[in-house]
Structures are given as structure tokens and as C-alpha cells.
Length: 486
Ligand SMILES: NC(=O)c1ccc[n+]([C@@H]2O[C@H](COP(=O)([O-])OP(=O)(O)OC[C@H]3O[C@@H](n4cnc5c(N)ncnc54)[C@H](OP(=O)(O)O)[C@@H]3O)[C@@H](O)[C@H]2O)c1
Image 1: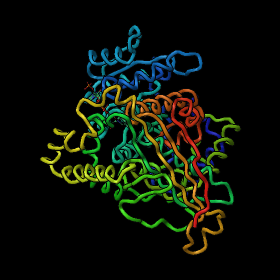
Image 2 (image 1 turned 120 degrees about the vertical axis):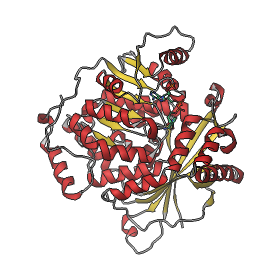
Image 3 (image 1 turned 90 degrees about the vertical axis):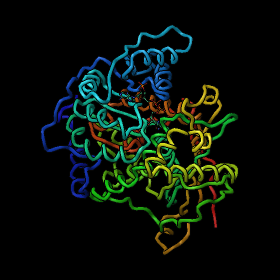
């Protein structure tokens, strides 16, 4: 199933195309070296959830159990793993609610022990990694998967980790047939599928020039995140210079060709009357991940070749990508009140300034509630708080009713299309739903997906049925309005 023979001449065309254009460890590489076999072609488990005892991990178990061994599901065998089997057992009990504890194997693995990770990777088709902060614990897991040919998804939202893993392990993952995709949670699938959904509403001759995403979080109770996410954010900010260094050290990737001029910066805080929200720029992973997907698309405009695709599937995938047009993309966090936005700015200021020094980080990490104004708590949200929260992610697209207008000097966009992705609480409802649905797509459609490599999620899951699956599981995609603008 995974041999060279399966690589069709069409796929080789792609390689030729992109090798001409790129100096970067690219989206679709095939190593000229020999293609290695997976270490274990018949692993015991479809999926192992690593870090299953964590705050997010236990919600991921709960979500995965819904799809275990039901007839339509490709998930037939599941194990959970971590460094403490008694905590894992409690997490399993919690995830099963009052039902009898399911017979799920509990495996031991520690990210400080590479041999335990290699053993884990040799037992699974796919590892779902919930151990974070990823900059501290993620690399050995990625390495074990890349070395053994095991597939890997995670819920990381840390750009430097993702880009470093791409740089270090892409070639190995290609060689071993290990598909490695980070950011398969709220970071950054709603942004990835959301901009693509907006882009697909621009029917020729209309063309999109820019899409701005606006996240708004709502709840009858408090909106609270667990310490793990806060710690990851603090460490990302503290190491922002390393991300810049990493990017400078890498060859430039091809840029997508976008119709029309780039958008003006605009004020730091602004009110968007169309959706009644105040907004400020959000330095999340979303925009960087969308840009990585756009670079992949610039290298491979017809998408990534799958392991063993039918002609029909290739046509479907190419039709999907031809309906997507690159656009400038940014992400903002929004609130109904100006005061809400002021809160976000204060939290951002604390993390941005205190995160620079070790004493500042100590303060941030030891008093999360104080410095996040109550948005993060050491013990995380209660189940009630999770159940009552939800998100809306608005995508405001501006472009031209006719693509020819885009090339007329600095002509302003004349059309606006607003779409929305909406779902339950972001960290512990939406993220597990997305991660588990990505896993099911991967298990079911493995032949249609790239054989191996390290990729952003949009380029891998964009043309699959992931959006439909999310819609069936409580995450909606809607067109809100299409208007001419002055
Ligand atoms: N994409 C998103 O939108 C999204 C949403 C939610 C969370 N996240 C990310 O997910 C990560 C986890 O967050 P969380 O709140 O669940 O954190 P958490 O509650 O602290 O969980 C961390 C997990 O990692 C495990 N772990 C830590 N060190 C380990 C090691 N050396 N070997 C094996 N396992 C180890 C912990 O095991 P023990 O139980 O034994 O301590 C625990 O299971 C964070 O990076 C967060 O940013 C992302």
C-alpha cells in the first residue's frame, strides 16, 4: 500500500512542478533517497491518545469514545497513554461518565524517555498528542512518529514549534510515510476551513482580496481556559525572537498571488458595525498557519498528492483547490463591548511585557488568574463553564465583483461577503471534536492523503469531508451576507 509503485505519473508531475520553484523543504517532496517502510505495518491500535490525563486530554478521550466501534466509524481500537497510569485510569473513568469503565488499554510513555515513545509509535497507526506546552514536550513525540512511520496529529497553537518541526522532520516523515499535522484543534482548523469557506463564496468573475477573521467568545458563565494553554501562550511570547530567527534562517517560500492591493493597516481597535463587535489584532497561530497553507498552495496549486488516489478523487481535489483563491488574511479578537477589548489588550500587555523576563514569567505562571484577568485558572473551567460557552468566528471578505477591477491601480474592493463558523466552547469542546474528526478522516481516507511529511492542517484536510463532519458534530458554517460596498 505504501510503495513507490503507487506514485502515479500525475504525482511525479507535481514534484517536477514544485522542485523547479522552491528552495524550501517543500510541501510535496519526495526524497530521492530510498523510501523506507513503516517500522510496524500492522500496528495494534488505530489511535493512541497521548497526554490523555491532561485537562484537554480527558475531553479528547470522551469525544473519541463516542466513535469507538460504532459501525460507520473507522476507529476500531483505541488506547490512552501518558506517564502516570493511575491518572490515566481516573481520566478514563471521568470520560466514560457513569458508564462502566471501557476496556481501553492504558500505556505508559514519557516524553523524556525516547524509547517509550518509539515503542508507543510502533503500536499505533495514529498518535493524537495532547501533551503541551509543545515547545517543552512535543519534539520527541514528533521525532518518534517520523522515525517509525506513525501518523501524528496534535492540538498545538505554537507557531515556532510547528515551523521548527517542519524544518527538522519533514524529510524524515516523507521518507517514512508519517503524516504529521499540528494545530488540529480550535487552533487552527476553524480559521483554516473558515477562510476557505469564505473564499469559495466568491464565484467568478468575483474575486476576493482580503479576509479578516473575528473571534468572539460568549458564555452565560465565566469564560475560562486551563493553565496548559496559558503556559503555552506565555512561553510562545517569551520566545518570539526564536521564531523570527528560525524564519530568517530558512529560504523564502513562494508567496501566493493575490488579486488587488494589500489592505491598509487601520486603527489598533475598531468597531465593525456589520457584526456589532469591537476588535483588536490577535497574535494567535491562526494567521501564520493560514499563510503556511497558502505557501503550500502556491507550490502545489492542485493540492498535495495522496498515497493512492483514484482519478475521481484527484479530480474532486483539484476542483476543490481551483475554487479557492488566495487572499490576505488576518485574525482579530472581538467583543460586544469596548471594555471587553480593553480587557484583551491588558492581558496581552501583561503577557507581552512580563513574558520577557524570568521574574515576569514566574509572576505570570504563578498567578494566572490575576494576570489573565480571570480568563485562565490553574484548575481550568468547571464542566458547567465548558458546557455554557460558545464561539463565533466571523470572516469578513472584501474583494471585487469582477476580477478585472482588481488590476486597476489602487481600486478599492466593491464587494463584501461575510461568513461565520460557530460552535461550542473552544478549548475542551470544539478542540476535541475537531481533533477526533481529523483522526477519523485520516483513518478513513488515508489513501487520499499525502504519504508523509509535516504540513499545516488546511492543505491536508481542506479537500476532505472534514467540514461536513464538523457540521454534523455541532460546528456550523454559514453565509451571513453578500453586499456591494462603496
Ligand atoms: N488548539 C487548541 O485550541 C487547544 C485547546 C486546548 C489545549 N491546547 C493545548 O494543549 C496542551 C495541553 O493543555 P492542557 O490544558 O490539557 O494541559 P495539562 O492539563 O497540563 O495536560 C498536559 C498533559 O501532558 C502530560 N505530560 C506533561 N509532561 C509529560 C511528559 N514528560 N511525558 C508524558 N506526558 C506528559 C501531562 O501528564 P500528567 O497528567 O501525568 O501530568 C498531561 O496529561 C497545551 O499546549 C495547550 O495549549 C490547545
